[in-house]
Length: 259
Image (cartoon, rainbow, N blue to C red; front, side, top):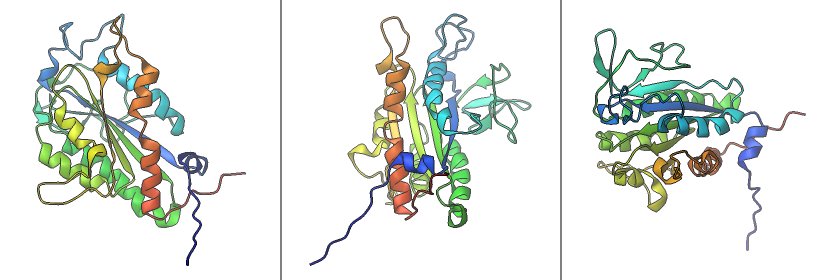
């Protein structure tokens, strides 16, 4: 009685059309990581081998930078006491410059504290994604945001985090969570919507799955190094389809490839 043909677009068509992947890193600086001066700390700077946080950022960033023209990533921290008043912050630029949060090198001016509240950083990136969404009527599929969140333990503001993820699911944004260390990450698997739609305690539901959780320890070898290729492949496995589903939801086609 009725026949309709629909063209299935791909992630690469959006990339070829000029869409930028804006990659942001969020790092856990809670006290459970251990004293950075101790070799047992997850934040310990080993002169001979990068720590787990560094390895995860390097593996994922090496792939993401190919989809970002300036190859500069904002780096945010949470769960630390920061200068000048040493008050606990859950959303700070690790170089202490919120106007230009791109950073390089190490820093020693903060004090690891807690708790592990991640909702503020999700909302931080979501504000940029929301601004990009408002420009879609004139710019089309121009910008998509990916937040790489690295944490060593269970999230303490779980209800707020669920609400933040549900809010972000309507925006051009994906959330990648990498669990660092040997903690119990059961709640992280719950946030990954592979087994059903994420729902808040108020009954709100995510309009699409935007979360991918990967435990870092599963990719470490006997020599305590990490398979960067395998880690990046698993971490970024769902992002291309999440991009496509977002723009399909918004009924936005890829822009023509420049000739």
